[in-house]
Image 1 (tube, one colour):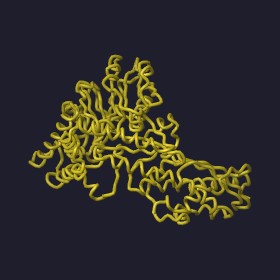
Image 2 (cartoon, rainbow over the protein chains, first blue to last red; image 1 turned 90 degrees about the vertical axis):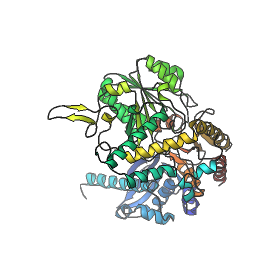
Image 3 (cartoon, rainbow over the protein chains, first blue to last red; image 1 turned 45 degrees about the horizontal axis):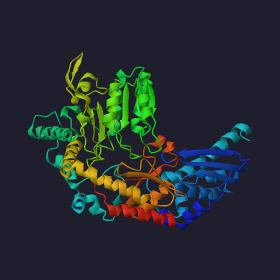
Image 4 (tube, rainbow over the protein chains, first blue to last red; image 1 turned 90 degrees about the horizontal axis):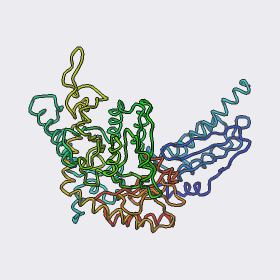
Amino acid sequence: MSYFFIENIMDHYKNPRNMKEIKDANSVFGDSNPTCGDTVKIFLKVNEGKIDDIGFQGHGCALSMASSSLLTEMAKGSELQEALKITENDLMKELGITELGPNRIKCIALPVKTLKMAIIQYLSKANHAGGGT
Amino acid sequence: MIEDLNSIRSDFPIFEFNPKLVYMDSAATSQRPKKVIDKVAEVYTQYNSNVHRGIYSMAEKVTEEYEDARKEIAAFLGTSAEELIFTKNTTESLNLVAYMLLPKLKNGVITITELEHHSNILPWRKVASLANAEIKTVAVDQEGKINEADFEKKISGTSVFSFAHVSNVAGTTLNAKKMIRTAKAEGAITVVDGAQAAPHIKLNLHDMGADFYALSGHKMLGPTGIGILYGNKKLLEDLEPPFSGGEMVKEVHAEGQEWNDVPWKFEPGTPNFAGAIGFGEAVKYLEKIGMGDIELYEKKLGRALVEELTKIDGLEYIGPMENRASLLSFKLRGYHPHDIAAFLDTRSIAVRSGFHCAQPLHEKFGFFDGSARASLYFYNNMEEIESLARALKELVKL
């Protein structure tokens, strides 16, 4: 079935969750898909190794925006190490998509990659600042 | 006239295999008639051997077929066979000519237009950086037509002028002959990107006067991986081959060598001979239908496409209203181009979405998410345009 008729996707697309800027975020990372112009920016508020709050801003097709929205729901409240493990397949399962061609998987991969980079950026900053404490 | 469209469609196995398919992505790649597919299979099953090498009868046969294809394509384009270099596609042709012209570009000026797709921008940027040359870009107006005053201004002092004959996004058809005349009067070498023109327009390259003309076989019923670079014979003889190897050389000694004659000196290594022979068959098929008829019929399709689609609320498109190729790049308020294409796919309508390898042009017209593009060929019909319009209206109501 085309993603166009999957209610969960259209719901997330039309009513995105956590679509917000977090002013006091401790990691912000943005990336884009050069082939289609999709952009996603992720804001993380991390506290004691856990994602206390997460927000995203972006621009793109229904698939990329719905998966960004859902991803923030999945990541919110979880340990950083757990959030790092979220894959495109996990997102597809949650969205209710059984298969996606190589050209469209990029739409889902963008938020997944962006979240990972935001977490890695946070971790490397924390390492530098705290000297490992 | 193209009267019996049903019989034409039945020449294309893809429509038999996908009876519901409304294929509107021919600017990306066309479909192929059975004759072309069979011809490629014939090469591999009946006389597969390398060209220009063996002296046994099968090797003679394949060489003859390969060179006959070149002659067939030359007649189709209005050139002589020795002026046609077989390449992989338009992109390779443009890269090849850019590197051929590199020695002539030292501190020179390369002029292109805002209509170019990436393949007619990036090779020039590469050679420009090597030759310390400057790139000038001729502006287009709001309808995607060449700004004549800007052209007159920028063409002066140009060493190489390279432009798209037909834009793959705006659908604008340029007056190639006139522009080439102006450019040549300024002493420029002219290069034409004919990828979107050669499949749809009756060409006579000698009459047009272009020094170089690039095109792809796969956009005009031929196999993938085969293209052409036409070059004026005198220039081809003078220019050095940027790439070398077997086949392109006459004599190689411990010291020194003598390049082969044109066009072979620009075809190093084993060429895509099956593709070339298949391309020859494609051109025969186009000749049989008649390029003049194809042009007339597609004008009607192009006009109907604009008329039907502009009735849809919130639809905006790039390019001129009149005199356009049978393609339309558009956006629909509130819908990302990928979503338009994905929805149309549920109605078995295949359109492209994205930047179509022409991001600067999209940005110029404020299409920052790209566009959806319906591009038609002579095997499309009016009913399919109506189906497209119906599906888009359905999407808007969703």
